Length: 146
Image 1 (cartoon, rainbow, N blue to C red):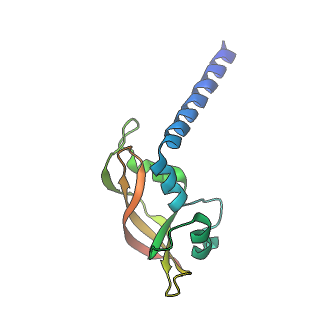
Image 2: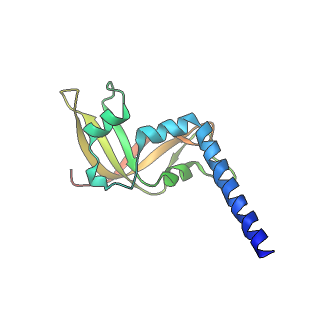
Image 3: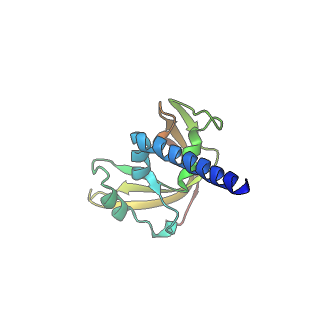
């Protein structure tokens, strides 16, 4: 009986995980947002450089600046959660906690970027699907040694 419960519990946990992945894989704006703006915490924040990131991620060169967010991915996802079952949809939400931010500002040469690192509060837009799709605004809390 105990082994049956373990198997059923494992199958339920696997199903829950797969459903979450399915939701994310079907939400192109969420995946694109994460590809364009998320920095993994597997690397030290100080090692990220704008020139490398802008080239590697294929960010449009006509932009004067771009924002990268250094945090665990689920902290960005939680911004649009109203409760455990429901999401905010088509609204702007200020994240309750500040994030480490790397803001890349294009230099006069137009082919290189200046790094600006900070702790900042961020306002996100929650899409119609209930996932973050745009960084709307930022409030600087503290510069991090630029």
